[in-house]
Length: 246
Image 1 (cartoon, rainbow, N blue to C red):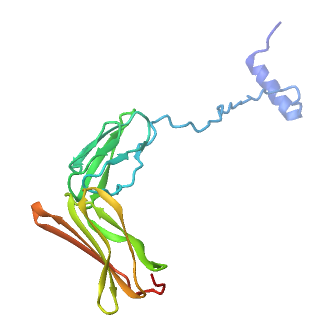
Image 2 (cartoon, one colour):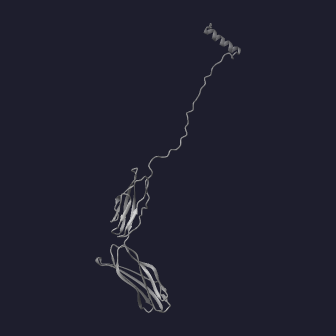
């Protein structure tokens, strides 16, 4: 097949354009295709880090008293196993903190004690917290059953607590004082009250003649070796009327 020279081809193209015969002249338009990057749905992934380590006990631990049996279990939230220790300060003398978290023993003296406890969990995380224990020392006397009239009797009871560091030589006297000033003993005890005694009940009561009586409770505790005297007194707010004769 003979090909026309380039100049004749160009001339033919011009004639075609001039006469409107463009149908025979086709130009291929480039097709542009854009591929959008693939979008993948992503779900939030759970954190695979260690659980937060927290000591759950309140900062102020339960109070106690000298010579009392004391036990508190420390608890944490995190990754077991937990290891506990006192990292700062000092426990009350007589108490010990075990590695597994049990604080126990018998406090030897009263006072306010502050100390910091550290715990390490199975992921080797460590946290610490400041704690406080109050070891109370007291000699107290309170009504258990307030003095009252029962028929021709006046009776009742008191509670005695000894959380001092020492046994106490105790004398307990209850008097019913009549309106004329005459006093009748309606209760008496004398014994050694051991240390770490809580709310020991001491009853009293006696049959009395008709009349009005003010009840006086007098409790004296002595620690002779230290020349210490503890004294507590109670009395009724007014006369109790015994109206039934013996």
